[in-house]
Amino acid sequence: MAQKNLKEKEAQRQENIEQTVSATEQFYNENKKVIWGVVAAVLVIGLGILAYNKFIYQPKCVEAMQQCYPAEMSFQNGEYDLALNGDGNNLGFADIIADYGTKAGKAVYLYAGICELQLGNNEEALSYLKKYKGKEPILAARAKACEGDAYVALGDYNAAVRAYKAAVDCADNMFAAGYLLKEGSALEALGQKAEALACYKTVENDYPQSIEAYDIAKYIARVSE
Image (cartoon, rainbow, N blue to C red; front, side, top):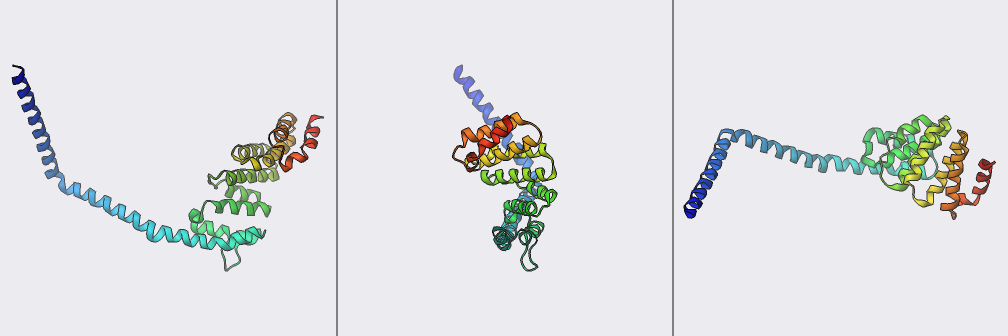
C-alpha cells in the first residue's frame, strides 16, 4: 500500500513538472518576439553604456585632469584669481567646473571655493564648498573649516560654529586643534564663553603638542574672567 502511494505521488510530481514545462513553452512561444526584443534592448543599452564610458567619459576625465594642471600650479603659487579664472590660454577652476563638472575630480569644488574665499568672495566660496562631496577626511575637514571662515566673514557665527564642529568631527588629529580654536573664537563672538572654554580646554588636554596649544593659555584666561 505504501509503495502504491509512493508511486502515485511520483506520478503526480512528474505530471506537475510536465505541466509547468508545457506552460513555460507555451508562454515562450506566444511571447518569444517580446522576450528577444527585451534581451536585445538590454544588450544594446549595456553596450551603449560600455561604449560611452570607454570612448567618451574616460577621455573626458583625462582631458579634464590635464586642464586642471595649470590651475593647480597657480593655486600652489598663491595666484588665486589666475587659478580660479584662468588666463585666456589655460582654464581656471570655474571654467573647468562649467565644462567638465567633477570629471577632473571632486577636489575642483574645494579648489574653487578656497580661491573665492581668498579673493573675499564669501557667498561664491560657499556655493562651491557646499558642492564638494569628497570623503577623504583631511580634505573634507578643510572644506568645512573653509565654510566656517566664509560664514565668519559674513557675520553668521552660528553657521560658522556648525561648520567648525563638522570640521573637528572629521579632522585628522594634526588639524583638529586649529578648527577647535576657530570654533572657540566663533563661540566667543556669540558671547558663549563656557562653550568657547570647552573648545580651548580640549585643545589644551587632547592636543598638547599642537602649535595652537602653545598659546592656548591666553585664550582660556580670556574666557575664564
